[in-house]
Figure (cartoon, rainbow, N blue to C red):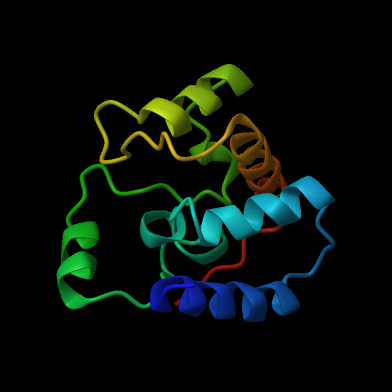
Length: 131
């Protein structure tokens, strides 16, 4: 396990203990993928909160802070840009044109299903504002 993966795993584990409601098995796998292999937390933030990102080097942080449009708060139901599951899958698999979201061919179809289950769970939770 590389150092970055180990750090993300530790962050994910601590955040999981603070997450109020239980995740389904698929959503729990999705959460691990979101914070690990998928690297979603780099731009979208820990547990979908763009104000809380994992530790990164200064150059990466600077690039992400200048993204236009900025990555959405994935916890907010009104941030949903895609109406169908198929559109959401396509955005993860092939990227999202007009944004900095790149394609991720490394995720399996099951990985994407699990990430989408996790994102669905996040949107059902009350959004907790961060400073």
